[in-house]
Image 1 (cartoon, one colour):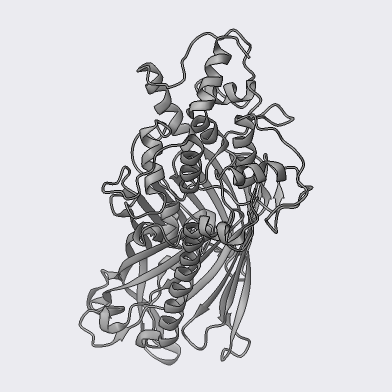
Image 2: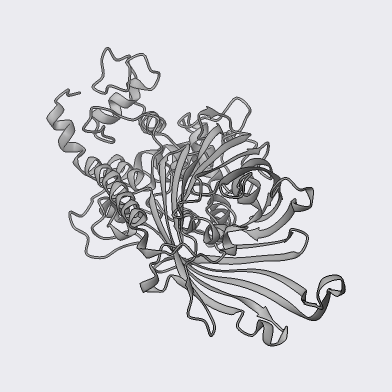
Length: 586
């Protein structure tokens, strides 16, 4: 093994450049948004109500409206549109409830992937029926209130949303970042009521901008800039037959979702999950205070969640000249089953018990990727396209209780487990969907080739100690040039491996030929100029990615244990060992 620092730097030039672009791009976007915020774009002090701010789905409401970094389904349309890009399934959401005992509130949203990114459409309606119109007749002791008619009130917002990963725009740079945009079309007014209400109808438009950043496996940050269009570009609301133009309230919300307990959290736990969500909100209007939104979400199992939160809202002060803050409690539960979701939210609105509101949401966020791949794998098995022979084996294969009979990667996992290359956990589970770290992948590669493991006296990476159990494996993987470190002399053993990184590592490991320049993309989301495009193409030609039967490759997706087993089982050296195992030979 060499300790030459310049050699390490040369090996990792591509990875270093990618990280630098990622942080630089994030900083540039934040700076632009901050400048826009400071300029204010000429929004006036008069502002019409944006009913989209009242409710945006029962889950974020039950979490105190802390949504900037924690939503990734169709609810993102109404919260942070950048979150849509993190869920590649078709998503549907809906919500209903009654505000202040009188206002009917309805929300529906739909999003799905398109060739240009994730697109969505949403609709929000708040309505009150049969509002009495009254007038005062007489004066003094003979004065009386007389009803002269009734009117109905409706307020609507239509959302057209778009979101994409920045890496798809910047040719592989800025990985882990997504951008989203909403165009919003408002209409509200009264119907009926005669001449008294004839001018009480209006319409307008505005836009939202969102940013989301996967900082690390347990932290995702978000930023939303709501109603940012200047009046000169249409960011306004106009009443019919009136000259007055009103702005739509501009606000900024930033925060994140932080994993406290779970598989990829500060405290490791494979059966439970606890997340903290915290957002900070400011408004452009000088009389509006800054607000906090806090939420906790606890999943004791994969299908049930309990939520609690605190939602701050401005209110009139004691002398009605100052603005105070209400600390409103929120709570709720959620159910998730086969991709379908049900959420309930309890929301306090002020100190009066009559203002407590109950919201209910139904939706579909899609099934997770391994389950979809399982069905695809079954179809391939029927067509006899599995690269590993499906024959009755002489030895008894080692299996695990969390591998269903039709699980798409069941055989490769059992083969590698029986060969001692991959192991399970003490509770007899394999946890196929668990994401793989760089140190775990190094161990896996070295074990598969039966290299002799000797203790190391020193190692060239500052974050790997010689006494770490994985240190000898890391040393061999780097010495064999299967994996590299980083220019800052770190290996980052606990960093999750992305599919893009895995494609390059497995291509080197299998000795595949990688073209120096790609002229044609092998997957829609893999640009020919992306640093991993040649490795992806080589792996696809070698049959590594048959489980990705259609659609995007998913460069930013994390590599799971099941995927690692599937790919490794197709490398030449391991494939031969599997053939020997099937014959009953060791």
